[in-house]
Image (cartoon, protein in one colour):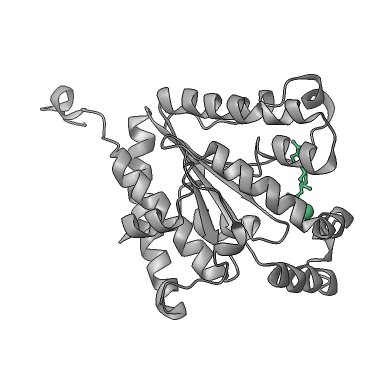
Length: 270
Ligand code: AMP
Ligand code: MG
């Protein structure tokens, strides 16, 4: 079942990406109440495998989240990672590069944030900001952001070769749902602190981001680090889609408990 979902949402490098054609409000015929129960079940299964991942301490999983403001990256982290052992999860939120980050190449801060063996890493924004933002804001020449596709593909290949599985999710929210969420955020005193004026200026150049995202997804979706376009107008759909694909990947990683029984056989604790 998840295999079909993955096929449906996978970005293929052989085809142009038109994000308008990817429904942001797809529900796959799922029922909202049942989906909540299903999400809990999926998280429980992930937690079981996570124990083995930590014990094995050989492989790691990196989940990259990208999407517009208010597409639900923070909410997804809260809903899907709650239930995993926090000792084995590292969430990193990438902001505008500052301080020492600006003194290095753009991948420097990212490479340091890659999950250690046995860990699950979640990136709330990522190295992809270093292609998208310079492009839409015209901060660097085209050849500079364009060659980063190659850097990023090679970087992710290195991670995959060395034992880190990479899954990338683009949370696809519609223009109208983003408007509603940004307005709600501004109007609610409990969430207005989250509002950033750049959310509105970025919204004004929505089509530029759309074009930039379409190219990024196609240029960097590869078997070793696939992109999935997640329908994100409904939070419950968004959460279940990501959780199911993560679980599917963890099952495929099949981490094993270390072989302790041979050496422990006959040992008695007194
Ligand atoms: P938020 O995720 O809403 O807290 O906002 C973080 C902000 O930092 C967003 O506006 C991102 O576009 C911006 N950002 C993150 N990484 C970079 C980067 N490498 N270059 C430029 N802007 C970035
Ligand atoms: Mg923001």
